[in-house]
Length: 129
Image: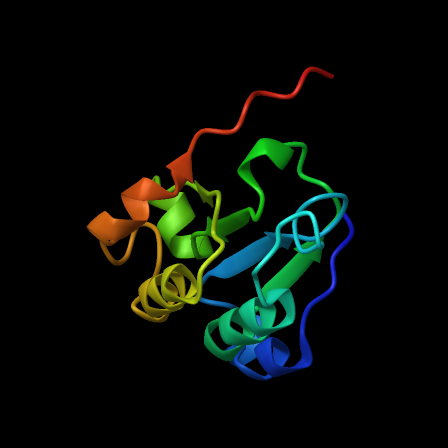
């Protein structure tokens, strides 16, 4: 998955480049394209980048859930057992704002996931290698 950190998010990193948590945003064949109509995809990325470091990914192979956002816990939270949270069908600004507020509060393993985001949470299929 190619990585592209936004400039604004890079500035939010703490000492030694540590980030409290990160977000991966799928932008390829379906996510972030005209196939998902009525969404300001650029504004969605910008809103998330205001809150946290953002990686833009090629296809995450869950197109049926477009637009897909994965919230990754901080290293400390991951070491304590927190796991990435996959959110799909994130196609309205209110959901993006809810995600941004959650990650600003600490994200997975630090702050409880807002109940409203349960509507967007899904488990990705396991990849066969």
